[in-house]
Image (cartoon, rainbow over all chains, first blue to last red; front, side, top):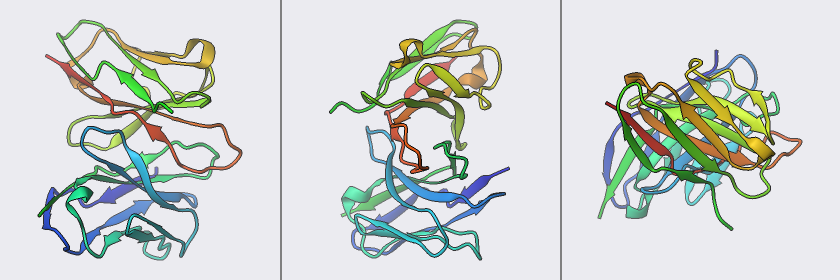
Length: 113
Length: 116
């Protein structure tokens, strides 16, 4: 079946540090890939997505590229801020037409001033 | 516009008792999903409603779990009787019915269930 493996953390960084959160997937079909983020006291929200190979999703300074050859979708940000402190989830959905998502375990990021 | 709201935010019950979780999706969203995150594990799909119909309930753990969405608006998830392994955070999410697979679900904050 489909699955997602991601760095679990927790990770603590200083402001302006570089961030990479690794995510790899296993899928029988050709999935769409997502990063969701959960800020403290809020529900999960979509951060970025990519629907085909070599697509790059980007939002709020974060980027991730759909790499079919390595089955990866690593999340990066060049300079993190305190406000980026949150839990980050990598996820996929198959192309069956629904938004049924398969999630990784999530990684808690804390950014200190 | 109100987001997805869930109630209660936290429930603590004894093993064997019953708990009902409620989800109010974003107005106009036909799709409603329930997910669960057991501590230290992935967020797992439970089921999917399209309006009042169960589209996919393949993730429901067993028959102690009953989900309803009468009238195609809010949904309830009842656990009866609750067991220790049911503890976790139950997330509800909604989306508009579209022809494409956007993957953008709008999540509530979750209902934390603790079974003692």
